[in-house]
Length: 94
Image (cartoon, rainbow, N blue to C red; front, side, top):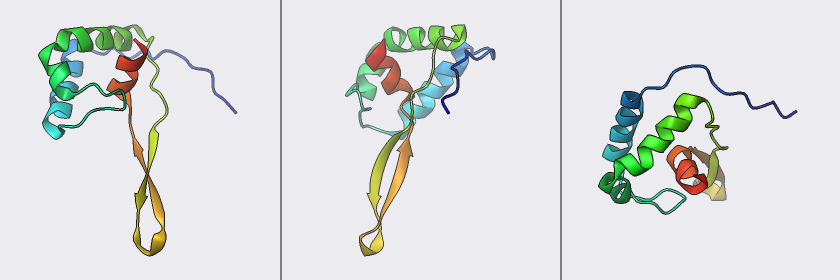
């Protein structure tokens, strides 16, 4: 059954978005599914993070499904790893 999408009522501050970005920035050098690099976002964070905060704060942002990536395991088995697409989704669809 598909649930109806409803906006969240919890407030999201600019500081929370900035803190999340700093956490993401520490962790990697790669690109998201949208091929936007951390360096590109870092060069102009206002262009990317302000609209994201605005959508989060207004309740108009709905996260996409998690991307599944197969991870090879022993004996030819595969395990699926879920990768969230928060920033990737925003930059692709905005």
